[in-house]
Structure formats: C-alpha cells, structure tokens
Image (cartoon, rainbow, N blue to C red; front, side):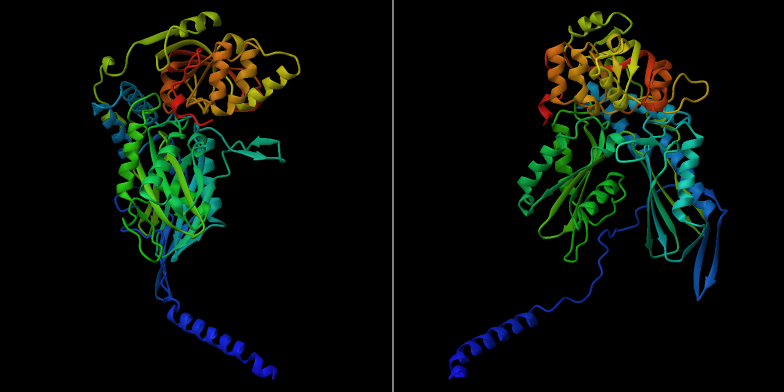
Length: 571
C-alpha cells in the first residue's frame, strides 16, 4: 500500500530527472579553445625604432633540435641601466609632436600654448642628460616577457635587472623616492630608489622583451578603480559616467595626459594593470573587436567620444583651455558576470617608458628623441598669454598679499625672491610644534611655501630638477597654519580641496599654481640658490630656502574664495 501511495512521486521525480538529463545533453560544454586575452594584431614593438646597445652577452646553442638563446645576466643589467637613464631624460617623438601640435592649433588657449612651450623647452634641457625631465624620477618598473627558448645565466633575472636600476639611480642625478617600512608607522628612505617593481612572464619564442617605465607619485595617484554593474554598459550611461570621473582627475599629475580607460577585467587588479599598459600605448595593436572567447579590444569610436569630452571640459593644459589630454585609449575586457570593474589612469607630461629586447643578434633599447629642439617653433610673446604680473617675494608678506588681491584667478605671474620649500613630512613636524604651543617658525610666515622635492644637484648647478609636487597631501594643514600666520601664499601643482579655498577666504591667503612638468627648465633658468633651513636629516623632505627669478605661476585660489577649479571639485 505504501509503495502504491509513493508511486506518483517516484514517477514525477523520474520525469524531472529525464528532463534535466536532456537539458544537460543539449548544453554540452564547448570544445576547449585557448584565447590570449591580450591578443595583438601585430607585435607591440612592430613599429618601434631600436638602437643596439651591444652584441656581447648573447649566444646560441642547439638542444634536442631546438635553438636556445643564452643571455648573460650582464645583458639584463646593462639594458635596465640604460633604459632608466634614457627615460629620465628623453621622450618619445610622438609625445613631443603632440606638444608641438598644440602650438599650431588656433583653438588652443594661450595657457595651453604657454604650458606646451614650457614642456618642450624642458625636454630640450633634459635631453642634455644632466637634469632629469621631472624631479620625481619615479618608481622603476620593469615588465619582461621571456621566451621559452631563452636561458639566462645569472642567479636571478629580477636581481640582475634591479642592479641596473640601482646603477642608474645611484650614479646619476635622479631622486631616491622609495621608502621602506621599519614597522607599521615608521619609514626610512632606502637611499637607492630600490625596490623596483619587476614582473617577469613566460611566453613562446626565442626573444626576451621588456617594457621599462618610471612612474612618479603624481600620476600613480591618479589611477582609479570603480566597481560598477552591468547597468552602466549602455552608450548614454557609460559616457556620462566617464565624463564625471575624468573631471575629477584634475591637474595634479601634470596634463596634457595620455588617458587610459579600461572597462571590465577578470579581476580588479587585471583591470588596473591594463590601465597602466594602455596609458603607455603598449596595447595599441589590440584588435578593434571582441569575440565569444574573451578577446580584449580597443574601442576607437568611444576613444574619440571621450577625447571630445576632455577638450570641451575647459580644464586644458593645467590652467584652462582645450588640451587636458593628448589622446585617449579605451580597452574593453571580459569580466565576471557579477562584477564590472572600470579603471581610469594617465601617463603624465613626464611620459617615461621605453621598450627593450634581447635576441641572438644583441641587446636593443627603444630609440627615444635626442634632439627635441626640432619640435620648438618660433613663438612670439603675444602668442603665449595676457599680462604677466611680476611679484617681488622679498617684500613683506602683507605687501605680497595686497598685490595678489588686485588680480583675478588665472592671472599669470612671474615670481622673484625667496621661497620656502616644505612637503608633507615637514608639515607634520611643524604641526607638532604648533600643537605643543611653540608656534610656527618665522620663515613660513614671511615667505610663500613651495610644495616640492628636489632631485640630486649636478656639479656646477645651483639645483637639481626641482618642479612642484602634488598639493593635496598638505591640504589638511592649511587652515591651522594660516590661522597662525603661516602658509599665506602656497605654490604647487594641481587643484586643491574645497577646505583650502575656504581657508584662503577666511584668512586672506592665496594658492598659486606652478606648471607641472618642466622641472629641468626651472632648475636651469629660475632657481638661483638652494640651502637647507631645517630638518636636514629628512633628505629631499627637508625644509629648504630657495632663491628664484622669473618663476612662472598662476593665481588659482584667491583671498575672496574664487577657485579656478571650483566647477570640477567633488570634495
């Protein structure tokens, strides 16, 4: 009786299992297909002009019918050392041509043209291989792709490459920017700019190929990840999303930028890694369409749409205009169905990268431009801007403030006199003194404070490369310092937070924008004397006294609450 009663349930279960089995057979797995997600239409270096460094350190042999390329570790050290020297001083011809094109564009603002010309002049000075193009000579990054038939003869490839980075940073006028944690809170500069970021991959073939980069803090800090959903993937919403986010990049990383946007990614880190590679134009030869297996591609149409947005937003090359970006790269990646990462990042005016390779004929490095003067046109002063206001910084601070108050934001300035240089660590120490009741030192009350950190000073020079650093790290100190009579005039690059604008309005202060990028030209033409004022033990983070002449700047925030960047602020 029990069996008879359960029979309907058994028959129903059998029917359901039969249907499930049929459905599984109808959706059998597809045949295996390997898809290289970053498959190129042609090699990344197919149009790269190379120079041969040496034919030494390489040879070949036969093993089991295969030719093997043998590479001495000295080849890796030589290649990394030479690459890091070159990218600190030289730029790609395409980047220089983009700057030259700004000067020829009738739609470019006078500020655009002024910045472009200063960057070209800076490139011309840096190409003498003494002063680096930017004072922040960056984190050294080496990405290597080692063919399966390449055998290196050294204890460790990463060590040999790191030795080349070490030789460059310790043997030239580059800055040490890497700090090592001694515990959770205490740090110490490594004194060599090591460690480098080194990533090595195995690939088919009998070549060892490289991408060398130097990434400064300013542009690295303008790398962003947004975890979105499928809902953003329609033309109207995606363009609106991108438009909102690129305006938040600001100018702290020294535009005009090479902008990279990546939609998708099998992980957040894959998305951001692709951003970095795309910003270096390393992925230019991706396909222009995807496929059902997950192939990445560039969306050229969307690139043009985004480029148009950047040229309509009004930020321009740092102080208003058309040229916020030179160009745009948009890469679409496969993604997990429940995740849609979107990455945005830039390569700044210190556009430092070079390709390298080792094959059986020798060791090669990308040939960068050694004669940037060919991109310098004849420019009249009237082409570059409106009135330039000369400011004597050696007069009392109240006189300086009175002069600045007569002019609107965007006004071009030429500064001569004394600046005090202090970065975030020095500001933290000054705050400790203020909090303990000691008050601020007189020097930060009497002189404008310049947010910068010098590279090493070459023999016979007053200063090493000495351009401005990003201002945002010092924002939290401004209100307290100005209330105590200090930091009444600040000089840096990029936009400031709303709190700084409010502090300047409340206390009668000013924020002046310095051109981000031309650190070598400032060292050679504007900086006349540099000496340590306090905290010498901090190295580049010490407080410095700097004498300048005709130092270029703009009024960005005034004492009335006006802010050039106000319309793009989000904080």
